[in-house]
Image (cartoon, rainbow, N blue to C red; front, side, top):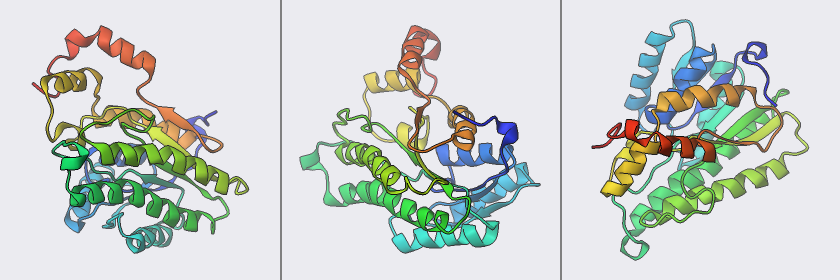
Amino acid sequence: MEEPWWRLRFAQVVITGSSRGLGYALADQFLAFGDDVIVSSRTEQACLEAAEKLTQKYPARKVLSFPCDVRNADEAVALARFAQEKLGRLDIWVNNAGVSQVHKSELQETSPEVLEQVLATNLLGSIYGARAALQVFSEQENGGKLFFIDGTGSWGNATPGNVAYGASKRAITQLKASLVAETKKEREIAIHIASPGMVATELLLGGDRDARASKFINILAEDASTVAAWMVPRMRGVRGSGKYFKFLTTRGVIWRFLTAKGRKGRFLP
């Protein structure tokens, strides 16, 4: 069950990987609800530019930036402590940072460097982010909410040509279950997964694909702003722990294919 948005207090939010794409759109939506947000990504310049743009749009809200490479555990802790210091508390942490293989290839043809980058960012980054957030949540009377973002592979489907990405996302469901079990005695700490479906970001649109894949993207993908507008009210209002809410449902997929003619060429030629 969700609380209606008008009953919710303003939240203090950290979003990793939020200088662009879905992360930026989520930051925009949280600010629209009156929340304060820390924008974070690997490079300081990208953080500053995103924060400045959001500040111009929401001058009455607090928008801060903090560079963080989620592959580094110490940087994740520094981000969480920065939020605690500058915002007074940390209510919501969104593990959004993620990468995929730009050039798809079978496992035996994929370099160890590419595999390590994907797994370190998507899996270790999620673990380090969760660890940092939970350290702060455990010190707060009101706890906090931790969100993981899923992706293709999360439900056990094959991801040929992108094995490391699929494996990293499949692990997220197990990670969520483990952390729900670990925090079950902490009534104010909640662990959830938010599923954005197929989002038209650089992560999706970049790289190699065939005509069939482009067709599916045009049919199933949505703008980041559309997805974020659906996700943020649910992230703010969700109660309990262990929830898994999905933007793109089976019914939604069927409806998109029934209306496929009107979706031709939306994102890709």
